Image 1: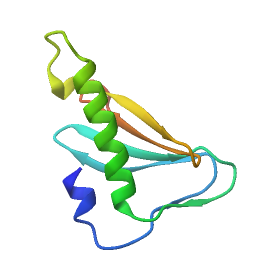
Image 2: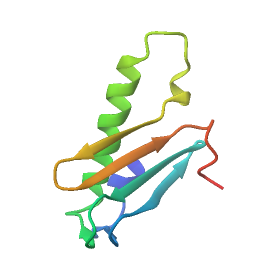
Image 3: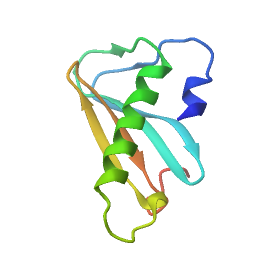
Image 4: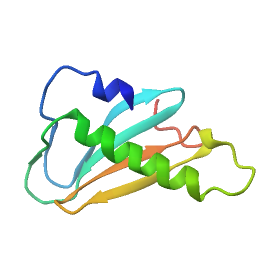
Length: 95
């Protein structure tokens, strides 16, 4: 997630009803999805990093078993019509 925070200032944009991969490190991938029919522009990469951090915090806190944290996957929805997804290494989203 730090990778996203370190990107040069910019405003991520996706066409309607689409997703785009924004990070693929350590076999985990981060995607952001526009859930609306019209194009969506976010305020910055920090917005996606914040969403990914929320997924990570929630899912890692919810795992009370002996599941390694590198197997965590999840999605967080923002009320303004977009979402962030994290896929762990068990999904092949980095290829």
